[in-house]
Image 1 (tube, one colour):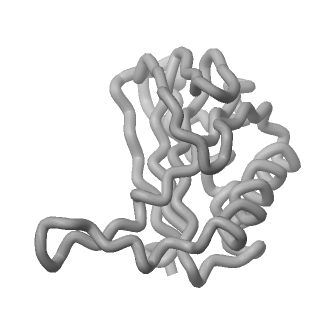
Image 2: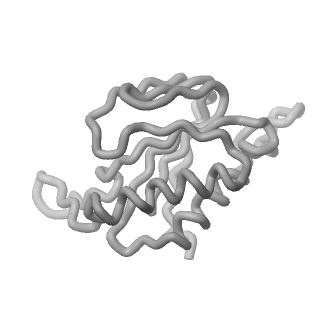
Length: 145
């Protein structure tokens, strides 16, 4: 499971939801991902200290600042472009597997105490954001193991 986490002052997906201060999460679900991985990643995102304290240092989490999360499913994060010019998406989970894991990730974030808005799974969306910083972190649970 891969996530691109962008600190934002606001974000929205059309169709979908909108948030104020918090993070926009672009979420890619891999074919080998599980419910446990979704929960681990949600906890990592909720506790990731990417918000500044009074001294300007990254010391506060999404939970500390009572921020929100907008989660947008994005299978293209699993693209493999090592051969040729057309990316392969064979590493991405098929929709019937990916959607329940996307929903589980969102539920796990809520269980951590984060307010969550969602894009529409499988839909073509316009995503708008005001990146704060800018701060963008890429999380890949395979790389964390």
